[in-house]
Image 1 (cartoon, rainbow over the protein chains, first blue to last red):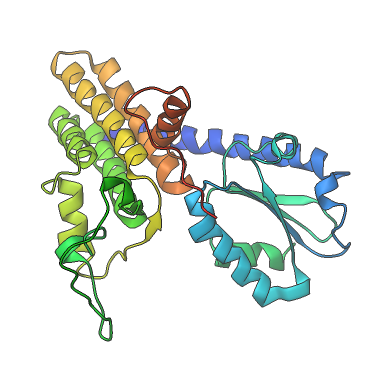
Image 2 (cartoon, chains in turn purple, cyan; image 1 turned 135 degrees about the vertical axis):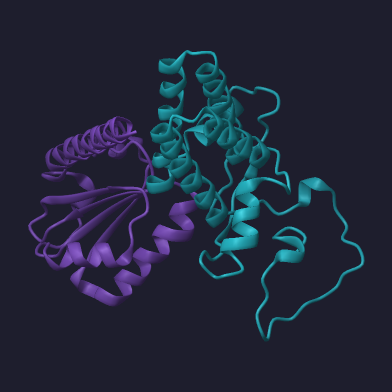
Length: 134
Length: 178
C-alpha cells in the first residue's frame, strides 16, 4: 500500500508541477502583452491593476468573481484599477494574454508588471494579500 | 421551492412562504438553476474516493464512484452524493447552498462521462487490465480537480460543443449571465 501512496503523491506532484509550468508560461505571455497592450492604455500609472477576463455565459464569473471584484474595488477605491475584458467579444486580447478559460485574473503591480495569474475563481482575501505587495 | 430543493429547501425565520395551487407554463418555463455547492461536494467526494481506491487497489470503490456519478447524472434521489449533501452536510451547515442560474444538463452530462470512465475502469481492473483501469481513474481524478479548483468543467465544455454541432440531445445553449 505504501508504494501506491508514493505513486499517488508523485502523480499529484507532477500534476501540480505541470500546472505551475502552465501558469508561469501564462505570466510570461502576459509580461509580453502588458508592455504596450491597448487594454492598459487608459490605466493611470502607479496603481496596481487587475486584468479580469470573463464571458457573458460564465456563471462562476457572474456569481462569484465579479461580486468579489466589485467589493474589492469598493474597499480600495483609487488604489486599485480593474480592467474588465469580455473574452468572447475580444478574443484577440484573450489570445495576447494567453487566456484559455474564464474567469482568469492577472494581478499587475504599480509598475504594470504581471505578478500573479489565477485561472478560476479567486477569493477577496487572496487578491487583497497580493495587492498589498503589488 | 419546487425548483430548489423541494421539501428540503432551507428556510429561515422571517421568510414568507406562499402556497400556489397551480403554476401555468410547461417544462420550458422551469428556472434553470444549479446548486454549485452540491456539484463541489460531488467533485470532492470523487477525488477523495478515487484516490482511496488507487491506494487500496480497490476496483469496488472505483465501481461505487462510477455508480454514484451515474445516479447523479440521472438526478436520482438515491444518489449517494446527493444524499450525503442533503442529509449530512447541508443540515449541519457544513456546506451552504450556492444556487445560481445555469443549465443542469451539461453538468449531468459531465457526471455521465465520469461514470462511463469509472465503470469502464472498474471492468478493466476486474479483468486484469490494471494499467488501462488506473489510467482511466487518473483521468477522472485530474478532470475532477480541474473542476473543483478552477471551475473548469470539461464535460460541460464538450456538451456545448456538441450543442454547437446541432447534435440531438444537446439542446441547451449556455445561459447569458447578464
